[in-house]
Image (tube, rainbow, N blue to C red):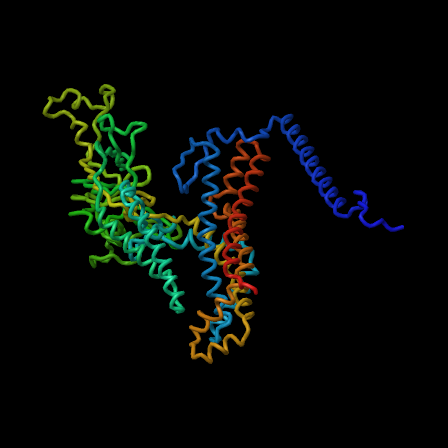
Length: 600
């Protein structure tokens, strides 16, 4: 019997109503199941006295972290340590996405090259890298390439432009905003506004003239001219009132700060001047070192001495002598990098120069070099530095070369002659052991280039990319690029051949055909699958512990082991990766929608 026209169908027979009810029931079941799981887990953790909430985030972390994009000390909270992990992950992911995209496009194009050698090299790269586990590649870059091959830090290779390379990583000159940067901000704002205005005007002109062209280049030129003019107009900005420097001779660290109370010391709460130019002057300083037999770049260097590197132009004179001439009788010095690095040897054949084997004090199976102490006396030392984000600048740990004065704890460490000597023959006062050093803080411009130096066995200044970071980055980039290359190859081959033929008929060259016709169309096909590769690169950064790099996964593991709050920490870890993935996906999907063809 059929329902009468106009009669209402009972809800238990209405398909739409039943569908809605089913979804509501399913949602209720899911919520109840989640609540039950949460209750059981919370009860079990409470009985085990394991934290089940996030109250631990405000507790002191005590985790030492070598690479910190923002200021951090072990006394900071777990929340800040967790933030450091997120930022270190983004530091790898963002740079890795850019480099993997560039490398992947290049390899993908090479796979379609008419040149047989390029095509085969690209095929070998893709087939080899894709079929090698990523973990193996990261370990290979860290243990077989970046750690053993480069020289030690005091023997760092200096590349053009002031780039330093050693087994601790790469240090680059890098721009930083100074305390004068706010004075330049109005001009930057004007540059953005005028650049946008130039973009709108130029785009309108091109539309009215019905001519091809890009309004972006004129807009960028206008913005650049305004920004540079503002930078030159601002010039240097005077240092704040009461700006002072405090120097600690034992560490070679000088701090530039605002001495609010005028006591000449850095007190808590006093402002430190980050990224401020400083010129260090040392009238006369002494450095000491000991010759060592060290393995460097997979070979053993015998009787090699290394002082902190001092470049020509940074000193008036530098002299290296043996600290104990009697012990070093008959030995000579051959410089590798004068005056801070060389070899101690005995001129066995009397030819007045160093020959291989003369640095050995013993031969046979147990080879060893001469072990002596050396002193380098530097006069007129001067070095231009830029303070770090903590307002600190560092120079080599010079001393005066004089023996320290006896302590004030009586005459226990003094000889009878010293105890009863007349005042004219008394031990030298402690001032003689105080280094005559001066640090002149200078008025900064809005942006300053910080150049790396090596005051001790580590980099100071510039931007440091550690070997741990580089190993992880290289592994991720090279591995991900092999998959991107296949995506690029497939996208290019998906462009109809008629497009190339039409471009040739118009007289376009091969490069113009690829740049103007083929690749723009292939990009619409390439971008969607590349998004998943970008997300994979970000998630694969969790393999960072293989290169001893501390990122999100490593830090959350440490937090969970120290606090016992494994469940909350795991929730934070999952939520962080989901948030990063969603942001990547949102941005790239917006770009993809912008590039997609508009259907009629």
